Length: 627
Image 1 (tube, rainbow, N blue to C red):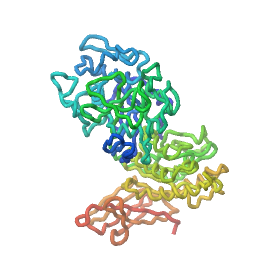
Image 2 (cartoon, one colour):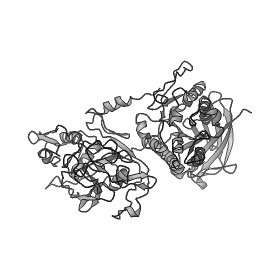
Image 3 (cartoon, one colour):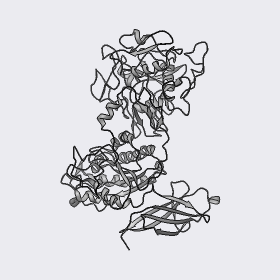
Image 4 (cartoon, rainbow, N blue to C red):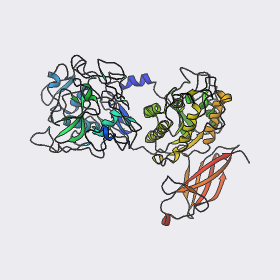
């Protein structure tokens, strides 16, 4: 069984000083001293901000084509001091500013020793405050150092290539035009990237302030409330606070301090300046908002300006197909987690798969049912129940969307079983928003494994008496299920392996549900398990294929034996979006049950790639009752 650290232990381990930095699959050294915490900014190809909100007329403001990672916090004095100790023993690029020592209220780093042997230390109480008195070139060099695996990594090339200036080394000759390299792994965010992470709420909605709100924030000392920030001199007449100190005031993707504390250098050029965003500890509330834009000379450092870094996501590796089903993540809300005194559908599915001899492993960060619930799951075939899952009770689809990549940091699923949307329904949330969130969950998980197989559930009904806003919740559920059924053909999910699992048809809440009107009872849990088991008849990750000299394609794959009767539909496509079947397209030559857990199918494409171009072939399988 797959196991992960207990969250508290993992957090404690990550707080130690000398840990290795990993950026979403990019290996950045075996023993790096600085660890960055990231949040994933998804919703690729999001629309730009509406024209009425784009008062500067900036092109494509807020729109970003790819998923990326943003630093959860501004770069701190502790992190920057590690950088100085690694790269500034003689400091030819003036990475250290004397005001970091001289300014007692804002500067957080001291320097000692002679030139060539400089060493740097963080002032007491300043380790987790954002570093200030850094200019744009300092920030770029820090990004290059991270890109180049820290340690002795180069500061002058990598994410940004800086042309030497023999007369004045701190200012590169190309400083006014330096831009990010296509292979950059760690970099300063562009204005569009920063703006999106701060203000984009999803579904084409931009907020005015980076606390997920259009309401003017409150200037006060931490930790405050969900609209609080460090601005307007609220903290000791105007000074810095530790990053993330306003615990409830996170941005839409989980960043902190994009409003107040320190203003932040961005990559974007507004010649002869570089753009600054976010406002600082002495600014008014308006400077924290989406309508404010600051500028600074790239070679000047200010008492109120720091930076945060962003990173690319490494291209997902195509995993070696596992034997059997591989790592199965059961994802969703309490319909996945189940109740304290019930076994959950996961247990019944686990026993069915064991009985068929399928190799698999349930994975996830959670082990319990409900709040502290551990039913006495019986052993099966002499094995204890594999409890791992990602069923997070009470969460809507948007909340699952925002957390799913954080949950899967410690493992890479091969299969995802997704039941989500009931909490959206009972809260009256728009079904189109929930369907869009489900699509984005699949998009984000495919960043972890592009070959993942998705079993996406049409959610079961609730009790007939459950209403929201005076309307039956089941009407909402029917609307959402209709949209779920269209997701496999959504162009944004082209190439995704999605099987729709109908948990609604034939589910009678009167006999299959609990008295709370929302959750399944034991009979309902077993029915859910049976539906997933039927959908599991063939693992899309376990097929192997080959083409013989006659052009016949043979595929062999794992199958589950009787009592099911298996039939095939062969389909072809030229673009993975439109699929066609029928005798004009393909011919099924032969199929045979090998009686060792596998099935072999041989088919022929009736058209030639020489005249019809590239062709993709897939098998759609259906299990019915025995003949």
